[in-house]
Amino acid sequence: MDRIDHVAIVVKDLEETLTWYLSHFNAKLIYQDDTWAMIEFQNIKLAFVVPHQHPPHIAFNSEKAESFGKLKQHRDGTVSCYAKDPSGNIVEFIKP
Image 1 (cartoon, one colour):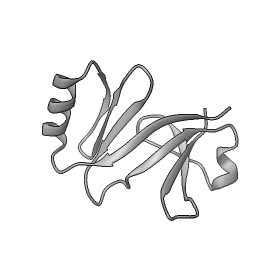
Image 2 (tube, rainbow, N blue to C red):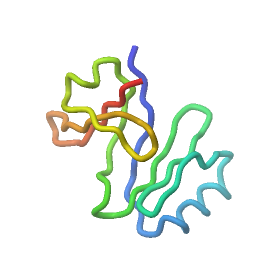
Image 3 (cartoon, one colour):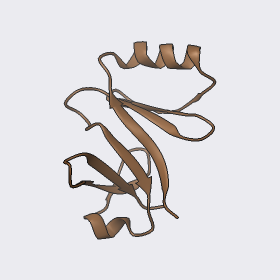
């Protein structure tokens, strides 16, 4: 069974957003650079992306990730590709 890895939302101010979420929820910062950050909850990860750098999206871990497009290695070490669902939503497929 495939698993949702994370949801990515666009934020105006990365530092301000991180501070707010980490002070209001029991979550852990697992990655941050100048254009995006990721926090981890017990059941899911939430990514914060700055406008025009990364698309808002939902990401799945999928053994068949390469069937959705050419896989690319990212700065955080993950390997994935992006595609659109029939409604035009961006979906990331991460190779576990």
